[in-house]
Structures are given as C-alpha cells and as structure tokens.
Image 1 (cartoon, rainbow, N blue to C red):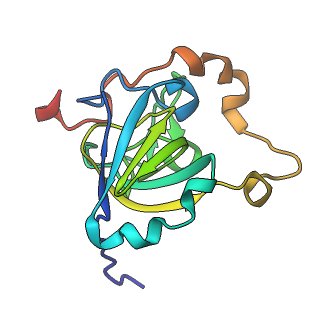
Image 2 (tube, rainbow, N blue to C red; image 1 turned 90 degrees about the horizontal axis):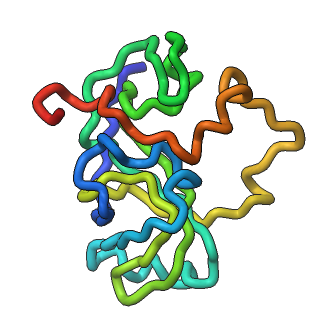
Length: 166
C-alpha cells in the first residue's frame, strides 16, 4: 500500500544550531541548551493545559538531511548498521523526535531546554512526555550498550547532510 501521506508544519523550532554539523545528537547531550518553539497562531488553543508538564515530545521534519541509505555508519560507532537500528537523521521519512524540558509558555512561544535540533526546523506535532506511558520493564539497546558512554561529547559531524549544505 503506497498511499501518499502529507503533513503540514504547526510551527517552527528556533535553536542556536544554525547547521547540523556540531549539533548534539540527542537531547541528553544538549543538556542546558535553550530554544523556542514558535507555534502558528491557529494552533495556540491546542496549547491549553500543556504548561503543567515538565517535558514534552517534539515531532519534527528533518529538513536538512540528505537521502537515506539502508545501512549507515551511525554517530558513536564505526560499523555499518541497519538504518532502523540507528537514530541517524537520514531516513525514508525524515521525522525526528526529541523529549525536551518545557520551561514556560508565553502565548504561542514554548521556551524549551535540552535540545538536539537544528534552527528553523519545521514542527509537526507536540505531545506531553509521560514516563509511565513510554518506559518498558527491561530495556535493551543493542549495539549502543557498549557505546552509550560517548553520548555526552558526541556531536553531528555532517555525515547526513546534503553535499551542498556542508
């Protein structure tokens, strides 16, 4: 079934990262980094009650990635891995997710912290983060188990950006 699926942005994410290279590769590695989510005016009523959550899930379009490969060398590794066993940004559907800290909301602006997102990223959706909904009993994380200690210092090195953007 190859049905066309389309999404419209509901806002824009503003961050200090003007290009993918040098951006933290996960929100935890972007601890303390601040940004602003600008939600388009027609969606402001949907923000009601969100201010009571400390963390939110941002779902966004990875607008700066190049075409994908089914096997990639991911960040924090030097081996070729299956794309779906990685969080590499170049994907068949370039959708990103990040759990970020919500500091406050002022009208259509969400002030957030702990970022790994490139500036001007189109926002597709926002959901409250509730750990009791999202955690599993015994979590395994495959090939990353021996490499997770590298997260804090890992940054995007530009390998998934289109050549004309490098």
